[in-house]
Length: 383
Ligand SMILES: Cc1ncc(COP(=O)(O)O)c(C=O)c1O
Image (cartoon, rainbow, N blue to C red; front, side, top):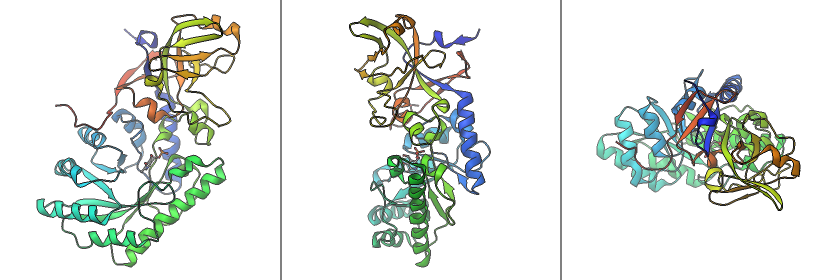
């Protein structure tokens, strides 16, 4: 018996499989056309079923943002992953467990002290930790500057180490999200690549091995120039897209593969508004579209079918479990009686999806094809 979206309790996370397939194929082709390897970042999707689409057609590994993701994907047979958040010695036991399972779990460092601690930890256990040095190419989050002495200090801490192997440098130009033109993103993409390649060049000049140069964000992956010396691209949000990405030219609104299914739970005429059962916990409080040409409030409201209503509707206010949608046109109220289902497109899909433990998978229509799990949080997997 086939299930439909109307049988799903709300709020629920809906994923359109065909749009996912289109988005992932587009990025795979784009990166391949640039002669690079794609190492998809699974921080947004956190799902092996989505990873299968992202990995189709390439033989690289994945990127993860938590050790929980690393353990989950290892459990599903992925054996090459870059954990792209600075490691600290306290977390090395979990990485060691992955290495013992035969997973190439590469960690990143930007501190000579941590690099030395990894080398000592590995040597004491007869293990070799693959390590990349994080390069700051302008986001001012983690990483060492490509021209800095700090870069060489981290490299020196790994020189000749028995317990660690320097396998490259990685950079993420997250400041690309602040660019407001394709030319602006392209310039940031050029800086990202230039900084990472320069850092690798300096390490090699000092006689250190540095085979990999890994860069990327969705905007720079799409619009950055091809740069000699870069070996792989990491990006993640492109798999789904969101309302913010649509406004910085990473995708079109028609490409957005993930939405929140919600139910109209209230109806008011003073002033005209509907209340839905998707509030801050179902959508997140992300307001990244504020100040953009299309300020989507806390998300854009569509009909259950995914069609746009005849006037732009957005979630204007959120409470923990309530979302309030002001009706610009009082006649529209009649189209959304209590009990009606709607779909809400998210501003920042990474934040919204993190509220759910599974995707309800559809292909265009409202027939439920499957449910796919997600690995949220930071804890060790159950069992
Ligand atoms: C280190 C790193 N690499 C790659 C990415 C992927 O970027 P995007 O989410 O724009 O695809 C991120 C995103 O936060 C990141 O932190």
